[in-house]
Image (cartoon, rainbow, N blue to C red; front, side, top):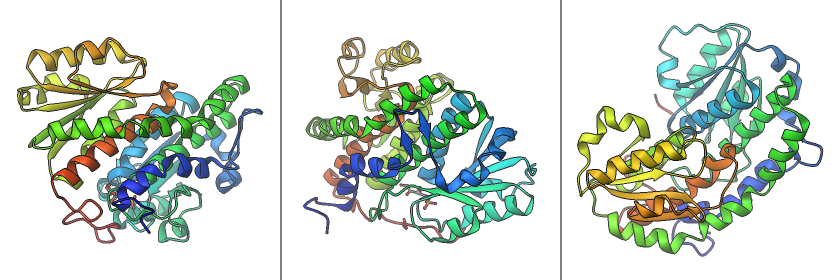
Length: 366
Ligand code: F6R
């Protein structure tokens, strides 16, 4: 049932070109520059006048929420706050009827996320869900929602569910932008045309598997690892670090690259691998200076770069190329090599990749 793969996690990583296609099916119309989200269409009018969005989630789903914040603010110009469900539920948050809460959960059963939804609902907010498991508890608690359609995810470490969540958030950002009129049809045509081809770019990213395995071999015995990115590369870094720590038990931290000099830089020596999201987008030059800072302290740099990059290659110890894409879609592609890197490191360390110690696929207790 692993489809010829050694582990469910690897099978699920390789399923992503397909799962993302499934997630977009019937929802995007590139030629018309239109997004349709049947699950939330009842609220189309309301979306024109909302003051803000609060995203609640845990773990990997929370990371997807951070990518969503970036996309919704950029395109729909609606302020977004991303909250850990477990913190949000125990504060006394200010919520009004004009707020929309988006709850993200692969399993649809996470206790803290459910409690956050219940609290926001009592206070009058409109609740949207982004879930993978149809008919789970969260989709039943929400007012409306959009399924990720990634198919069953068996590996405890979330992979294809994460990229499907990011895909849904991308669609939601465009849908809200369309409703609010903060995006032109021609811009949407351009973006949706590119989004439609993202599965092929993910396929290309997967083709670096052998190279990623070689990089994994070099850093597999590390005790620590840093992941750094800026802009939407920051949540990608957080997700890369979470994947590594949960399946390989290497201590890993994700940081916004510029925050490094406010503390984590003290950790850098020749033993410390630092993984950079260093693709060619608006923060490229800034990331390059952060790479220089790490190299000056003899850190080992592994960089996720845009195909054909020459600048980063001069400095980094290892470069893994991914296809170029609009900044909006980079998280979807840049995540792929990080999933593979964690996978190979964990396998090389003899870890139980599909069922890491102490973890459960759905966390139904707080
Ligand atoms: C990490 C992972 C967890 C979950 C978290 C939320 O790979 O799987 O961090 O993302 O427990 O679970 P869901 O999305 O089911 O609410």
